[in-house]
Amino acid sequence: MTAYLVRRALLSIPTLFLVVTVVFLAFQIIPSDPARLFAGETAAQETVERIRKDLGLDRPAWVQYTDYITKLVTGNLGRSFTTRRLVVDELGPRFVNTIKLSVWAILLATTVGVLLGTIAAVNQGKTMDHIATIIALVGISIPVFWLGLLMMFFFSVTLGILPAAGNETWRHYIMPTVALSVFSLAFIARMTRSSLLEVIRQDYVRTARAKGAQEWVVIGRHALANALLPVVIVVGLRFGFMLGGALVVEEVFAWPGLGRLMIVAVGQRDIPVVQGVLLLFAATFFLINALVDLAYGLLDPRIRYA
Figure: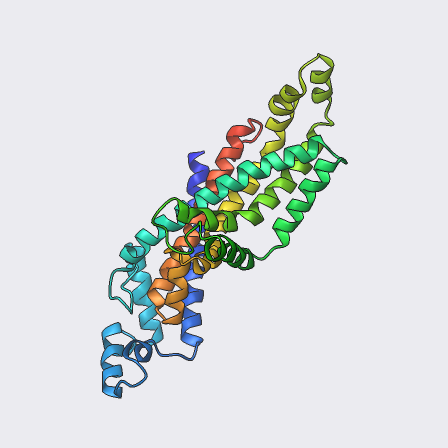
């Protein structure tokens, strides 16, 4: 297992390197001047040139790139063009906020999704199955930003029972968590239903019923335990996608997370911050994938790490 984790870590390095390179090249191609944006449209050219020199943008692109990679190897993500703070200090609190939101969202999506999928599978072809299927299809189809705005209008503007923005109290978490979890909830529900329908047709499930075991024991102990193996992978992948997908939700609800920070940084052409956010997203996604593989191996003893 140790060798497997080491290989996964080594394989992630080229991808992280590619992420940094693509972002750097993209900002070189975009016709914009971070120094001008920082100084303001009415600033004198001398002021702009001085800012450009302070930010290191007066050097050739390959020098800037080499300098950034050199610093990155030592763990230095540079300084923000806008705030002049270390990028690490900019990312820290925002990353914590995004992780909190994503964890609550994946917990909600997993709990409700598995329950909904189980109800649908147990009642295959019946009314409850149709209702669960419709809920899942709506959840997959509905745009996240539209759902967020709809909830904000209803619960904040019309009823006034939930705050529309911020993350100060537990009540601020409700709408962003629901909005972020809906797509994953529906996806997990569909996966659980499909997997459980396949498992409950197996011989060992029929044997458990023939022995007189109660239905909830058959479903919970025998069928669901095995049906959840592929669901584990889906949950892990959805959690990784949530970190990136939180960008829309954070913008709608003014959530102070990484997604909102990146939107602001892109608008200001703050290259070090954008690179830092994307690099952190990519590294986190790799870590989650590795943890999912390990969890799958623990749940299924037949799997061996070569």
